[in-house]
Image 1 (cartoon, rainbow, N blue to C red):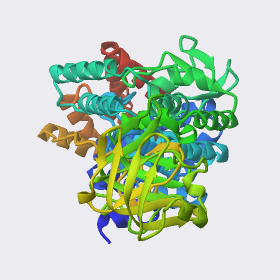
Image 2: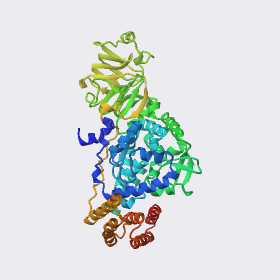
Image 3: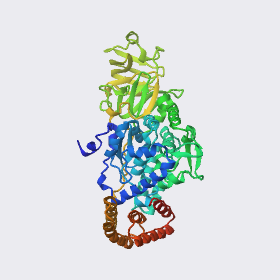
Image 4: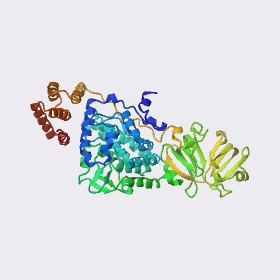
Length: 586
């Protein structure tokens, strides 16, 4: 067992999602990182105890999260396993469909990075504060867990588009650039302009895009209860010191939740939200996502659904009325005069399955070059071919070892020697042919020289969804992890010394020495902070907390307060953060 497998030994990560999972590398978190976590969590625990959903505070204690330090995911898993859930660490933004897929398997994907000190109030990049402290506590509520799981099951099968994926890459890049302290103004501007271009290129709102909006306005930025005095349950609000306080003010519009309103309202991840949706309860959300599923290609099937899938350059599954599932990248459709699909074609590795279980001998290694097959009824009989009895097959000349010609009502013709007839639960799902040619309107779709022709059987396509039918056997998901990754931060000598100071202050707080010892240890730290770190308000808050709690060094306390007041006067955002911090010092 390698270190990554050992780290997630308490959870069962599906094969097709393992490529998104990374090691947490807990030792890389600096003392400054832990101080950032502690500041945000102390603020949230204090403020959100009055304004968050009732599950929040209780969930903090039951999900393996401590206010004092960044959580170890393995410790979280020990706690979450008690309610049948788990957590895995990922590298920043992942495609929405993959994120939903984790939740379908009752796994919280948690970005293992943490926001920079300069972005303590809000970060556009997903981080461990947002994912762990935002998402994990609320899943203590059983109805909310049900919503997340059902959303995941439906969302993981939502069809997206090429433009969606390009937009995702642009958002991911911008979030990385904005969070990188080494980014220049020119790099940030270039990433913003790239995002604007990619957003403008989206001309059609896909299922995945609509579901992403629903997710954003519920799981990320949702309010619940009374419209006039709602409570917070959205992880984006629960993890943002600034927005958790500002979101309840009158200048943020509160709108009664509705499915249609949410999927019609776009969002900007880089800015505070101008409006929020208030649901009555989590049952309303469950009802909404179930209603949305009825509109999806997953439920509707047909030509329109196939067309949507053909615009998605990732794996999708088309389900024939016989029950046969064809999983691959759908690249071609042949249409009849009425615009109905009569033949589908995939390119590259394709697998065949029934009931989400791959058929033996029909995996993506066998169908490595793709798969094509007709859709529809035979011209000679109104009975769907999948429902033919052995007698009907024989009467139609479809018997193993003998030549046969199948003419479909659409005009597709399949001509060859029958090699096999495969039934599943007494329905014909596949017929294999040797020496086979397939033609349609004068075009050859399959040639005898290409080998055995495995023909799917089915009157119509009843369902189309993202990803493979048997995802474990297919082993790769709908989307691949992005190649754009955040750079590991390099620290100057001064920054390394700053981290050492934070650790010294943390040690003093946790070791709780007597007053004289604490005074002697703190004095040289104060001198160094005042000399070399004039703009660091957080370390001053931590020092002031210790001095006030222990009632020592009154002159130094006054000096720290004066320096914090001076910093408040220089920066409006820091002023609010400092004020919030001072409010928690007894």
